[in-house]
Image (cartoon, rainbow, N blue to C red):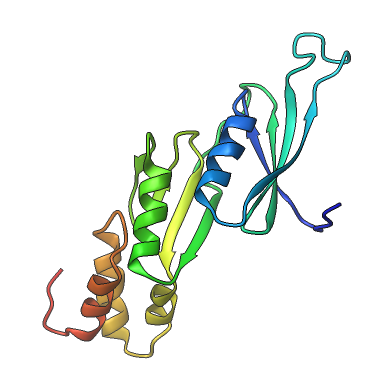
Length: 163
């Protein structure tokens, strides 16, 4: 049995298993751990999936089919830290399939869950002491949907760059 003190629980109407399978197909070292089904206490849903426990690259999540009462919004997102542009491209393309590109490295997947696909270099650049360079990086990021590492690096280094 996996013991993780804090587990993110994602509320879906009826798509918990579909979403878990979708996410597991994208992230390495991921799997469906187990499923729990509605029982006679909920006669309208008896036999259908109640919850799905799944791992994304070793991180445990639970997805629940709780009904249509609640929807995802941008108040919560999942951050994927990426080391390379090809990694950003991979996650961006996979998670925006039938989803929506937003801004600044944010997207919504086909289930409405918000994700941030971000290069680890961005945090480093935003912590630099050159305030003008940091401002240029921020302005560059604000103009992007999918983040492009080379453009962010160029914005930091090029004081003549006008964004």
